[in-house]
Amino acid sequence: MDFLNAIVAFANFVLVPATSYGAQLALGALGVTLIYGILRFSNFAHGDTMAFGAMVTILVTWWFQSMGINFGVLPTALLALPFGIIATIGLLLFTDRVVYRFYRRQKAAPVIYVIVSLGVMFIMNGVVRFIIGPNDQKFADGVRFIISARDFKTMTGLSEGLAIKASTGITIVTAIIVVAALFWFLNRTRTGKSMRAFSDNEDLALLSGINPERVVMITWIIVAALTTIAGVLYGLDKSFKPFTYFQLLLPIFAAAIVGGLGNPLGAIAGGFVIAFSEVTVTYAFKKVLKYLLPENLEPTGLVQLLSTDYKFAVSFAILIIVLLFRPTGLFKGKTI
Amino acid sequence: MAEPFLIGENMTGGYGTGADILHDCTVSVDKGQIAVIVGPNGAGKSTAMKAVFGMLNLRKGAVRINGEDITGLSPQDRVAKGMAFVPQTSNIFTSMTVEENLEMGAFLRRDDIQATIEQVYELFPILRDKRSQAAGELSGGQRQQVAVGRALMTQPQVLMLDEPTAGVSPIVMDELFDRIIEVARSGVTILMVEQNARQALAIADKGYVLVQGRNGFTGTGQDLLANPDVRKSFLGG
Image (tube, rainbow over all chains, first blue to last red; front, side, top):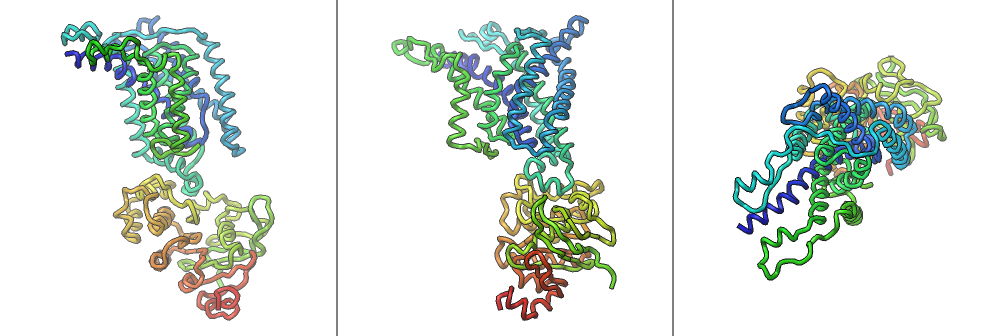
């Protein structure tokens, strides 16, 4: 019984939250990796693109809510999501047209692109704060829990509860659907294959008649969808605050690099590696150990390796270790 | 004499705004024949071929295919005109399967490409067995087959090969030359740059020996092989 309680406590505080966080990071990292593979630069504006997509979705959600439109047990934000995606597609295509295309024509070095994306980041950052403000915004509605801790306890008779939030369930289901659709697109469709070809060997892709501007445009459209979905899921799960999205940049980049930049499969694996490390390292294991160890060995401290304030240090440490010992990432990616 | 099917005439030019590499260089090939460009290192062999394909700026001269002047066209537009080019290096999509490589070769085509894929597999049977394997995992000779197969997917009238046998074993080289002859017999005009001059000239209908970006010797492959000057200065006796 104690053993079961330990497992449930571990699942409740580590497994479930990390899975949901991992899925959100994976969606973010997929976008970063696609841009790196096709446009060949690290897009620092990624976090703020997520914030922009989430912001538009939130505004539309509020509008729907004010009109009394809702999605039953599911959050209204899912209904508003397509609008967020469309607005973000518009934003990214506009940015590409007025900013990135200029540098593409110049055949600018990747480092110039990075700095340019930094500038784009600051502008998007400002736009989002200007429109919705820098504060926390709540927009989640619908049912809050799939299983609440109390229901779980009465169901199983265990003293530990396992709560699964609706947002966790939605995150995981959505992530699976999006990833499956993306891989289907990249591996089965003509356009998707042409994107992979362009990423693999740009010169040969041109010789084969693949239109680079079209590939770039489709990449931005996919990235807009991925970032908006990731941003909205993260906002539903935690809350929406522009600054947190900016901070997400680090774990997202860590995920993409750990998995191997340019490799979509790696981005997903990297997302989960980062999420699980972050949550495991910052979780206080006292509760779990209490069930597992005999009474006289019970820990007196929290058994927490790192305070949650330092969670970004985890991404940083993993990032540095990977760059030192395996610069191509876990899966075969490109070296940066 | 009628004009050859493909001709790069009096080509003078170099890369970008750099110095001229080619000086009044002419290469041409008749329909369904094999022309080979040979020459010492740095003679401008690859450059001459790239000039025909539109990859450098010509300051003088013209390129014509089937009588049509294509001097001003980009390489991509020349692909649409029926030319296909196999670069010397990075000539396959390494992360994609053999079959996907062939599909990408046919990217410009909107009709059914299955029949052409079958033809490529008949030409290179080993590729059929490796069709779902990543092209980057294949051996050097097999990669070259994928590269040639990819270029053939547009059903080109002219196939241009930049040192197709670079880095493959002698046995594989003979095999590749056999396949190239087979492609030529099916009516595809072939222009090829080769390092292995002796073997290449042996299968060539027409040979060009370039020396410092100029036409050194020109003739049928057999003529050049028999020419004492060519033998002495270039083929090593």
